[in-house]
Amino acid sequence: MKGRIFEIREFTLHDGPGVRTTVFMKGCPLRCAWCHNPEGQSFETETMRSAAPGGSAPGADRTVGRDWTPEDLASELLKNADIMAQSGGGVTFSGGEPLAQCGFILETLPLLKAKGVDVAVETSGYVPLESYRAAIPQFDFVYQDVKLLDAAEFRRWTCGDVSVVLDNIAYLRESGVRFVFRVPLVPGVNDSPSDRAAFVEFARGCRMEFLPYNPAAGAKYPLLGRKFPLDGIPDAIR
Ligand code: SF4
Image (cartoon, rainbow, N blue to C red; front, top):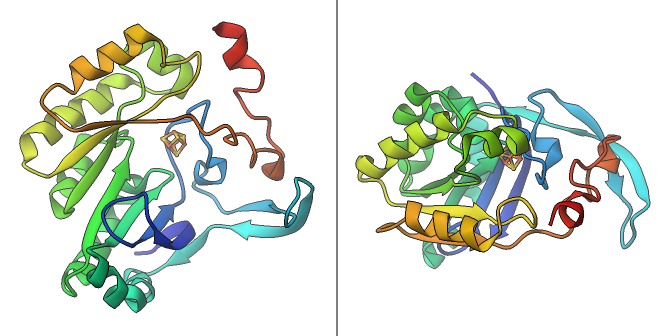
């Protein structure tokens, strides 16, 4: 069993409590138009240009995506175990969609938890219910995306079926696992007053965070030879 990862970022501060290491798993079944990690979408390794230091011009080619065994990944992550423990931090699995590699996650988490490492996940919830039910209770904390609630709008902007996410969220609410809903606000897509009110109503009784739109969301697409799907769109549809 191996897992494919496109980045391991140390000393992150916004992916959970304390100082954390964030593991970006490669591959996602959704195609959100605003995705700022397009190199996390394909499950295949890819060639990507590096951004030149200090500028927008591309630099050298690099391969994105490396396969890890659970043992090798745990060993790498545990190098910072003392710092994470002292700060109340841990490891957060992100992506891409980390739960799309559920088997790998289920083999890796016990290796971290055996050493007392706090483990969190950032998920779109767009995975089969069996995967979600198997993985979610193994985490100490869950960041659950809520992108759009309307089925047609969800399909339009993510290419997915919102009922998959809503079914998983129904399970999450009953699971007893600590979680927070995260809503990435995207201008012209889901940030109207009525959209926001709907999100607040949906999350009633639960923790929820609105995440501001990342204006640099499209920066990596040219490095992959792709066009950013939102180019020119948000202003046009306001
Ligand atoms: S779920 Fe996340 S990683 Fe997947 S396409 Fe959407 S924003 Fe990108």
